[in-house]
Structure formats: C-alpha cells, structure tokens
Image (tube, rainbow, N blue to C red; front, side, top):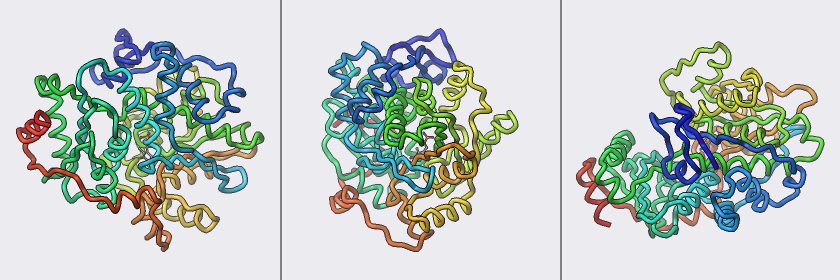
Length: 425
Ligand SMILES: *Cc1c(COP(=O)(O)O)cnc(C)c1O
C-alpha cells in the first residue's frame, strides 16, 4: 500500500511506516495514493462480516501484509457484531457499540492494535496516552494481551467517572494505568514531554497509537459495508448516511467506502454546538470557535483533525463539496430528540440522537436513511437516565469490570517520576 502526506505529497510511505509513524512531516496526515474500485460489491455484501472485511482490507492494503496474517488480524479485531435496527419507516440505525468498551472506537482501535503488532519490527513498543475517560478504555482493551507491547495510560485522579475508571483500570497484564494528581491537561502535557524526550523515546519505543492513525480508518470502512449488507434491498437505493462527527474520522471512512464502490448516495455530517464544519460548508470560512462542552461530549471538537482527508477525497473523486450536507444540533434539541425517539420505541444516547435529528430533517422523498449509533446508552448513563427519567441496566461486560478491583498506580504531576516509571517496569 502506498500513502502520501497530504501536506507534503512527495513524502511517500508504505502501510507499515504509516501505522508506525502515525503522522507525517509537519503533522501532515497520510492518505492512500490509490483506492481501488471494487467490481464485486454484490458478492462482498453476501459474505459474513469477518470474511467480507478481510477481502476489503486486503484490497486496500494490498500484498504488504500476507493475506493469511491479515485474515488473522481481522478475526482478532472484529469479534462483535454491528446490527442494523429499523427505527421507523425508511430510517435505520447502525449500532456500532457492541464491542468491549461499548463505543464504535473499538473497531478502529482493535484493528490498529493488530496492525501495530504486525508491523512493529523487533524493538520494544510502549504505547503512552493520556485520557479523560473514553479513549483510555478503547486503547487498553484493544492492546490487552498483545505480546511485547506495553501500554501506559495516564488519567486525572478523581476526574473521570468511576465506571470509566473500572472499565480500563482493572485489566492488569500489559496494561498499566496511572492516576495522576492533576487535571487532564497536565496528563497530556506529561505525555507530550515524554514524546519530546528522544532518549526516552528510543529506550522504550514510544508510540502514540492515536486517533489519526490510518489503520483505524481502514477498519472503519468495513462497517459501512456491513450496514448496506443488512439493509432490505429497497433501502439500498438512494441511501443517505448520517454520521455524528467530532474529528471526522468516521465520515472519512464512509467516504472511502463510497469510493470503493459501496452504493451510498450521499453523506450527512451531524455535529453538536461545535459547528466549525457546518459553518464552513455554508459560508466557505474556516473559523473554529472555542470548544464547548455538550451532551455528546465525544464530539466536542472545534478543529477536526481528519477534515483535510475529507476534502482530499472530495477533490480526488471530483465530487462537489456541496454534496455533503451538514448541520449542528443544540443540547436542547438533542434532549427533545432522545425523548421523541424513546417514545417511538428506540433507546438512543446523545451522539446517535444528533445524527438521527439531522437525518430526519434532511432526508428527501424517495431516499432511505441510516444513522450511526456510536455509543451504548449505558455509556452515557447519567444524561440518558436524567433526560428520559428511566433507570438503565449496565450491560454484562461493563458490570463485570465494575466488580473488579482497581489496579492503578498513583503519581504526582512530575515528569521525572513518569520517566522513572516508564524506564523501570
Ligand atoms: C469519537 C466519537 C465520535 C466522533 O467520531 P469522529 O470519528 O471523531 O468524528 C462520535 N461518537 C462517539 C461516541 C465517539 O466516541
């Protein structure tokens, strides 16, 4: 697989390099030089999720990873289903939250872990990351049990929900979690300092495995195929897909699926009050505001870092950017929508509700709609219970972690202490 840096197109890398490096020169994003047009879409749609995903990823990645090894990676990563549920006439939900941390990031995170394990070379690898809650869980579960990859996750002590803490601080093994006596920004600053320390980086093979890694996007392409495969045939024509967007990785993956030939008529990018993209599409000015906290907090992003990839795809495919519809949904509207959905028989959470609302507003006669449900309602238990006046059961997987003891170490906000911790396992 050949990829180039969108900022410096002369910088070329293969899949292994792109996965290991994450970002290119000047923080540029890597992007596939070619995306093939698949001529066997119908046959692919007839396959089960894992087999189909192996074929799609093989078409994208090529011979760089031997097919047998790739098959194994996909099988290890995609261990849970992505069901499509009919919500009302002509509108369907794609539930992406049946993985171990109950959010769609399990798809990308688990495949990225497999990819990194496959292309790592000989040296030791240490994944170091800071979390304010959710990404830590996805990273910890994705890398748990992988040989010769250590994971260290920093989080602000007492500032994440007890449930979130239980979800990733109870694993042990190759996952070490550290409660830092400081806030999230301080945790992030410690991580940055570690990456700036060349000697430390070399010594422990530091890697960030962060959200812009190309392997995540490639994995996410697969569930768009899974959605179309499950839709009734009449809903496959004129299909509109609404994506609840924060960093716009999810939307990028959908656009890659369309480029491969998956029959999707158009996409909708739904955001919360962090509305840089809908404003940009309306007036052509890229003018991020300060980030606002909202109910759909995984989408609280005002400078979406995958946006250059979205524009690159539209440009390369010759699609007008005006084909991409986008709108922002306020917290008040999100609450109303959640209540209306619940009354109509579908229990959702804020991120999915944002996507549903914009889809419902934008869908034209003759079109069918699909919206992506990116998190389990129990993951946003406090807001969902308050808004809907109900009590939610925890899914069994979460409940199991809830009963286990916390294994975290604690640390002062002190880089020397972190360095010693990382060097002396
Ligand atoms: C990360 C996340 C999103 C946003 O996805 P992007 O790829 O960043 O646009 C939406 N919903 C949930 C629950 C998330 O965790």
